[in-house]
Image (cartoon, rainbow, N blue to C red; front, side, top):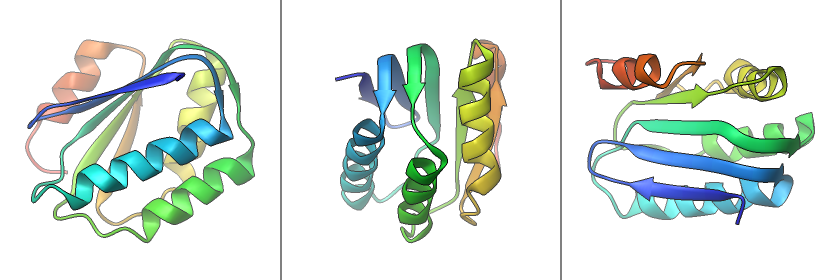
Length: 125
């Protein structure tokens, strides 16, 4: 599996590795929705793309992922911080940030893990 999902009461951490493909996004959205349905509280997320050596995903794959996320109602607002280390990862994260218009999810992109975690822990959205 090119990603792992670590969950706690205060943060979900998605860590990508290897080559990321469309099926990985599909698997992640199904897993996230299952966790969200089982929880009374939405949790902030850190999506760490730094270990991804390649991202073989097209705009339509991200668009499909976003459409599914858009239709899912969360119990509260959450923040998603994308952590990137190269231009391809940054571009992918910015594409996601640009097209996601879910009223309960705020997305930011970071190159520094401490800054990302600090932002995630700030109160509010």
